[in-house]
Length: 456
Image 1 (tube, rainbow, N blue to C red):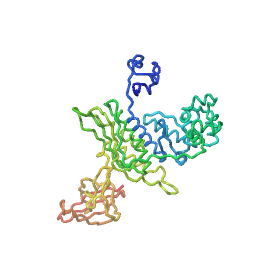
Image 2 (image 1 turned 90 degrees about the vertical axis):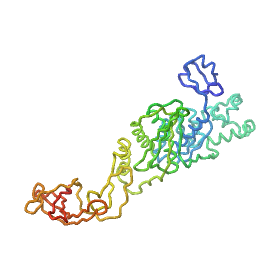
Image 3 (image 1 turned 180 degrees about the vertical axis):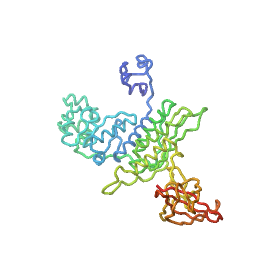
Image 4 (image 1 turned 30 degrees about the vertical axis):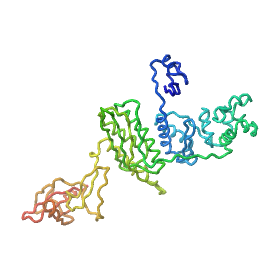
């Protein structure tokens, strides 16, 4: 239960079954449910949670504002087609709210006030036409409208119990008795007067902190908290049309006398991303291989660097399956699961020697840029080290005597770091027409032949 000024303001279903009611004092709750957990209301934490929810919902529309009674208003008129229609948009919004660990009542209507009232009324919550909205609002109780609550007793005395009956009262008398605020609210709800909103502006940087009520000793709990922060970051990135090439998850431990340095988890990506599901999957893989050195008391998600989101393909026939994105996600997943140093890619080197013309680097690193070079006929498989070949009738032998079909290609290089390489390379065929890459040493009295590579 949550207490504010020693009175209950929120309670769980279990506490309600024990007899607790909103407004009861601490002493009464202790008598009814001695084992109940009572927490003081934290207004700052509530505000941070509300701001986090608004950030997460920015992935659906940039026009979001805060309203009274813990309400988030979203202008989704331009987002319906992008997300597959009203039903799918509502489902995705509800899933995002659940991922944040929150409960919400959703409503959709042509007016912001109408959507808010439909959500509060727990009736049909999706109305798309104005004439249908009027029909669904008229039966609702007047008490749902905040501006009418202070005049509830007077309206009941008149026999006015619904919004439809409130609309039928003479406007002049209603304004003299209740003021213009009630009429203005009624007009905005029914679409007779425009509403102006101050849309939330996404911050320039993203670094969100989540302080825990209890210590976490397992990474599964850390992942649940990280998912909430990633949802918020995804909304922030979408609103700013940015993506993250890397991010940092900071797990803070005890402070004070038993203070320990925080545990850092750096996540680098093959391609910049902003989708929450993809980032959460990568964090799950990394956290599953992490052992916490101490209990976690706070989790921080930091996006120190962002880049512009990749442009959507404008081709008439886009590549099926978006293979580039799928490849990048596969690299991210393999790197998170196996480790950065175990997923590698070739990094060509500007060197004519075959054995030194390539290096290996991490798959997420960008290989060094090379100047344009002509395409050379090279085998896919190199023999390391080169295999000495026997000679028969002055011809190299590998299974059968080899016939030289192309060459020579002379390579003289390596004087600056290794013993100089002086070779003549040939493409050779055996009796079965299989091709090989062979070379003959130069600069020796008894020149030897070696097998360097095999063609596919």
